[in-house]
Length: 256
Length: 331
Image (cartoon, rainbow over the protein chains, first blue to last red):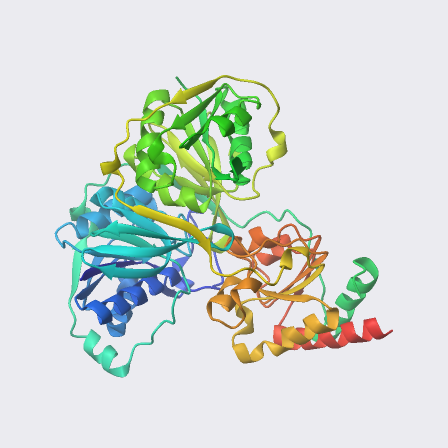
């Protein structure tokens, strides 16, 4: 089974965010980056499927040079090789533009299964996978918790709202977006880190991959949200703040 | 024809349409937009026999309701709904298509938009107008930042609205015509085979009626640290709840999860301990009367919905609060 896993590098959770001088994006030089969490689970799902059915896991990532370490990390965890679409200007593309790049890069791979996270922790549009499936002309399923593969088909457990689930079957090749937290993530072993250095990372230039189409949807400005609710911040040492909060709960909210 | 087309979601439950409540919010967003641009508001529902929900919609102040009807739409599939709505959009040629940002919409709307060489502007929390076209506001980085998006060029603009972002009560009553739209759809176009919906286990913990909830998130770091929030919950006489990652890790059972994939709660007081406040969590607890947030990051989105906040280390604050609560109750 040949599995492609599309991963994205995003700012580390709980990063302190500064807006850049254009007002259109973040000041990246002060940020640390990590693999988008749902994508890390997609990689884990791919590695588990490979352990069970054999085959190959290929990581696909679009991003600037800083994505290099994230790609190495996926190789150290067990991916066999990687494709890095190099671009410093992904922010100017809309989802369709990014999905076109990703799809063009793997057009010749003839993968059985493509996995990716259900959404990115930074932009959070949650649609790159679905649009890739459309561009590649293959069926898809979103927000998936479990995958069973057999004889050219898969059966996946989709999460629905309010604690409901559903199994869906579809033929391969197919694309599946993975929910966070569906299994335990593995760590890279020392041996894995060593091996990763010799694994292939094919670098493709975004400009040569797909003609830059004009984005129909553009991000014009980022800014801190305007607070809708007045929050009373209770200050002091932990003990003082706790005592004041207990007073609030007893005398204002009246629940103690 | 121009117009704003709202595509709404329902399921058949005991022979009656069970609306996804965000549908009404998407319709309200459609109304706001239609009014601003001076175009008619249209609505559509798709299904095996959508006559009843379409008739309910026809009692709203709309220009027209489309009942998209086909036997192959009885069970939801992304392929079926995409093909059907593609034909409807081609036929109506609306300027805008708005959806509720449900799990189902997330599954098909990006695909539908791509068929028109468009990108869905997903999970919109607001709109403002400084010209003929709206500015759509979305949240980035799990709610830490807002971003303004614009649509340009020819062709329809597709967007979806976040749960709770638009007020459904702005939709006036009225009456309008229902047009039955029968798409050309073949079984061979539907590549996936959906099974029955199911729940894993009957819920034994009903958080929805709990008056007091202490809820714990990633900030707790390890399972072994849970007793400090359990003690606070016990001291307050509160139910213990959690954000998704805690339940995913198996530290607390799934039935204690609050959020879009767990339970929705509306207690008198909701104390969020070490919860950053991703939207998936907020939609489950926004109905709380009072929200208290205890978090080390003063920029955490949970403070957006909190009435009271303590910015600090939960490992120091929570034990102190437990002691203070015991004292206040004893006094």
